[in-house]
Each structure stands twice: as C-alpha cells, then as structure tokens.
Length: 637
Image (tube, rainbow, N blue to C red):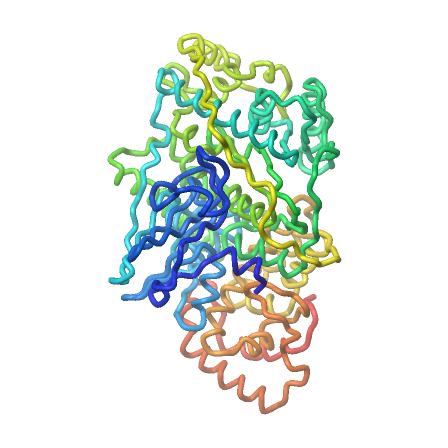
C-alpha cells in the first residue's frame, strides 16, 4: 500500500489503543477557516462533530479517545465487535483487509443484492457486505476508554427539518447560512485563484452560482460545466452558457488557475477510489491527477435533500427492483428473481426501520412525507456526495457544499399553507437572487408559480436584517503539505475502465460469482455494460465488489494470498485492496502444489461453505473443478 493510502485511513482495535494519537483525516469548515490539520485550530472531541466538510477526527485526551465525523458522515466509521474485542476504521475496505485473515466474516446477502441491482449506490443506513461489520450512523460519536478497553456510542440529534421557514427563527437561520457562505467564498477567492464554480441547467448548482455571484468577485472566475452529449449535458451546457454570459463569465475558462496537475500512478488511482467507495458506491470517478496547490470546488451537491426530489417507499422498492431486475436479467428464472426482489425489499424495510427507531430515540416521530428525504440523506447522499468529497480531498480538491450545510437542513421544506416541497428553494431564490429564476431549468422543470408567490410573501413578512459582518480572520489552505508523485506517465479513464472490465471478465471472477448467483446474472451484467455509454461500469463494479467479498471469506482464512491468486484471478498487473497481483503467482504450478491446494479446498468446502448460506448457492461439489482451471490466464467467453 502506498503512503498516500496508508496515511488516509486508520485502524484502531482493542490491542492498539495505547498507540493511538490525535489525527484529523480530511477537512472541516469552522468559523476560523478550512482546517486540514488538527493543529490548525483548537478542536477537540464532540465540539467538532457534525460540521461541514469531509472528515473523521480521532482525538486522544489522556485515557480517552473520541472519534467524531462530519455532518454527512462522508468517510463512514466501520465497527466490528466480537466478545471483548472491537476494531474500527474510516475505510470499510481497510477494516476488512485487517480482519479477513483472523476473524470470521459472513456475507450479508440482502445487502449484496441491493448493491448488485442498484444503479449507482446503496442507501442502507448501517448494513455492510458482512454481517459482523456495521457502519455507524452519520450522527454517531465514538468514545473509547483506553484503560478499560470499552467502546461507547453517543447519538447526536441534528434537529433536521424542525424549524418552520415561515417564522422569524427560520429566516434568521437562512440568512445566517447565506452570510456564512458569502464570507467563505469571498475569503477563498481573495486568497487563491484556484476556485471552481460548477454550473449546469439544474436547480442546485444555480443556487451555489448565485452565492458566488453575490460575494463581490470582480476578477474572472472558473465557471465549469460539462460539455459532451451524454445524459442531459448538452442542454445543461446551453443553459449554463446563457447564465454565465449574462453575468460576464466565460464557461470553462481556466486561464486564471494557478496550480499544476501531476499524474498519479495506477495503483494510487485505483486504491484511492476502492478504499473510499468499496462496498457502497459503484461508479469510480477516477482521480488521475493531483494538483500541487489546493483546488476548491463550489458545487450544488446535496441539493436533492432540500427540495422535492426522492420519493421511495417500501412498496416502491419492490416495484422498482422488480422492473430493474427484469430489465437487467431477462433470462433469470422466476423463482430466483422473486427471491432477489424479496431480499432487497427486506433490506429496504430494515433501512426504514432503522430510521424510525433513530427518531423515536430523539422523542419525535418521522413524518411519512419526510421519510424519503431522510433516507436519501442517510444513504444515497452520504454514499454519493460524501464519499465523492473524500475522493476529491485525497486527490487535492476541497469540496464546498452550501446545500449540505447542517444549518440549512434544520429548515422545513414546506408549510401548512403551501405543501409544495420546493418552497424552501423558492424562498432562497426569491430572497437572495431572484434574477436567476428568469432562466429555464433543464428537462422543462420549474418551480410552481404559486410556490414562488408564497415564497415572496414569506420574504415580505421577514425581511433580511442588515447585521454588520464581523471582521474575523479566515484560514484558507493554499500550499499542500504532501509531496507530489514524480510519476511522469498518465493513464486514461478508458484504460482504467478497461482494467476493471478485465477483472469482471476473468474466469476467476465469473467462477466466484457462480458460487452465489445464477450465470444469467453474470451474462445480464455483461450485456448491460456493452449497451451503456453513461456510467457504464456501475453494474460490473458492483458484481466485482461482491465477488471479492465472497473470495475473502471463502479463501483467505485457509489459503495464502498467492494461493488465492492461483485460484481466483486471471488478470495480470492489477493492483487493488482486494485483488492481489497474479504476477505474484509462480508461473509453473507443480502437481504436488495442486494436490496440496486440493486438500485445503476440501477444508474450505466442508467448514466454510455455510458462511455463504443462501437460496442461490450451487452444489459445492462442482466448485473444485472450476477453480482448478483458473491457473491459466484468459477471459470468459
């Protein structure tokens, strides 16, 4: 593992508590500035929990360790407990890597099926691919007593959607959010030219562009939009260009940027995404370069949480996944299809149950109209935007997400008089930048004119107060502390995707997946990938993740890494947290070695097969012959 990866994650267990020291992993936004190092500000314990940013902060105070996380829980904290032993990490992949040889892990098939079928990422609240490992909730704080070797979890109530927007308190919170972000954006732009402002044809990036437009910037800004023909990007570009031109900006003008990009080597590129996203997110947005100065990105990430967007009930889960499985796997036997749907619905119900239980502990019920929003925030937003922000940070880019600010999420989205869940964004537009409503939204979307009228009425009732802004200093990190790789080569996204695809097409991966799934699932994923242009690797990545998890719990407790290569891999040169290099395998496997492996496999079949127990398991007696044929490289046809 490279230093870039080993420095980014921790492993704390019962046996190394005395060696644990304070360290900030990631970055946080405070009143003092953007903090990337725990020595940059006086932060400790619970005081830094739930802030904007992307971080896990491990704080050692004598005989107590406190572990806090950002509001969204971007990294995640993953916990394994067995009797008096516990272990935790801010990377699921890193934790499994440490535990898989010495601890028993059992596949969570319900979660695996959700990961297999979902189009981008899971939305589970606490579950992971292994039954013994859970992800802590995004509002959990960890307390560890070092002398007693005891772990305790504290739950924080963020008071989400509790403040009425048609109230003085609600408007005060909204105005505070606005002024805070104007200050942050202005300070960053004054201290570095390396600020990127995303703009598309949608609602969310238009709000953050509006903030940028109000912060008194006179120099050119880097207004970025995607320019290709995929997805809705062509329409997004046309609308973004119209807005940017009206405000005097050129789209995608990088002339004022000061940093230089340095290519990362293949191992770091792949590991960076894998250690952050493995088991939760299926699209690898490969970070192929790293700037020599911090790059700041102002985006509309998380805007779906503050407007009408996601409606996904338990019943919807059954309907959506039935249709998705039908389209993905047209040749799947009806009985297996029914079982997979039931499995995903079971996992979905657990997500809703976890949410209801959480709010009951806070002494209030979760209203039906809010449950989808909360599930999106707890799951999809956390895995998509949160893990994306960690990916960005580890590649030298600090994300700025005003729409994920915890202050904003305390506000209710609508009122008794106006049930439209777009009311909050209508209040934001009409209060701070009404001129941005004069431009069309992508996909013929719009905010209802009655909702806009109600928003104006609320603003008239509670006008903005002219408070004097405090002249506080604000720290903006500019120069990076880490060394840039001297790697001179570069690798394309297409080459990286091709490497992932070769893993999926390998005989080893196909045979491992056949331990659990019908072959028509493998063929369905391969066919779907061949016909997809936008985010085409998501289904293959999900299947690979599950295959690697199966391999880890089946073989690592019995076989060495080299033996695992011999049986489960046929791709040379690929480096990743779970996929050892086949080049480590002896080219000539002697008959005596094969006989020894056969004996070890017999142990696996008889003592470990129950760990995969599920309705789709094929007879174990046919597995040996398959795996004994994987030693030669090649791909499945």
